[in-house]
Length: 133
Image 1 (cartoon, one colour):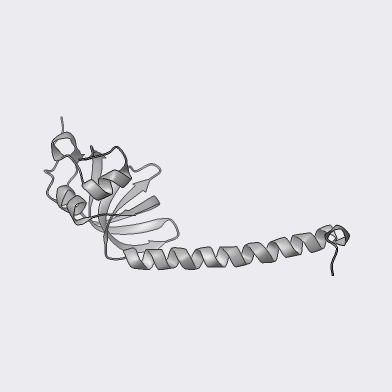
Image 2 (cartoon, helix red, strand yellow):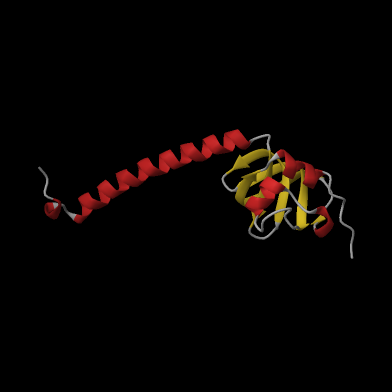
């Protein structure tokens, strides 16, 4: 039996390193499975500096995503609730939202990818194109 008090700092670091590698591998597998399920689906993307966009997830690599037929949600109000999570389920109130024109392809750095319901897809895709005020 090994007494933990007899381990050297080097041995502790080696054990710690082995444990974190295993965790990282399982997290990467889960992320890949989730992403695979979302490819081709309509999603909402939140970014650090480019706002919120909705479109079909075409590709994902690391934090980078490519959306097809995307629209920028320049200003949005949920039909019910207050968050992007609520918006992904209940859709937008188009009369109180400002949604930009559709872009064929768009590259973004995503910090959040949220799948949407058919209701959400419909309210975003049917929203009028916002005009300058």
